Length: 204
Image 1 (cartoon, rainbow, N blue to C red):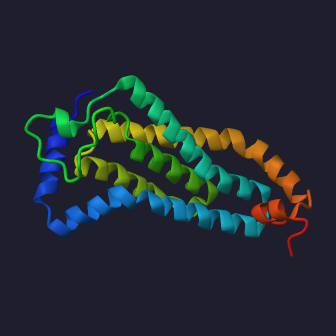
Image 2: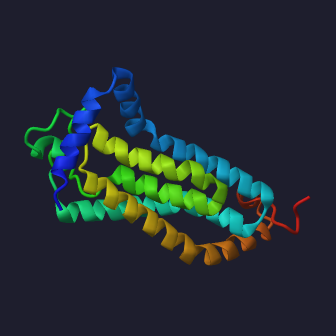
């Protein structure tokens, strides 16, 4: 798959935008994933307040499936060994961020895989969050090309990998984890019950 021409078009476009736009994308591509972390905490806190084992399970699974997507993307990276476009594409505009060192391969994009899994995991935990998390994931993926760190096919496959793994893992693990959460809620262990919430039977 060769998306070098599209990479050139996007990086040329990036250099034609105002400096504040470039700076905004640089900040987003570097720190945007932290917003998903804040949403994990908010969704978990909301779920433990409800006391529903299924809600708690999905809130806990959101960061776990994101970690799974990261590991999967790293395994693929180490197999494919695709060079970064900021070194490999002749005639492309200079990347807006430092080009990652040799050996930090390009395919797939870790940022995009993480964003895809986080977006889906959070949306499955709280469906109305999809209108926020899915655009955040797409924007993260686009930013990786905008700043010159990845080819378009890197971020496309990263999103697909993260989203599909996230959805599959949540579907497979919600039931078993819900039973574990329900058992913990009934255990009477104070620290464990604080983490999961008191459960429907004990909830005021």
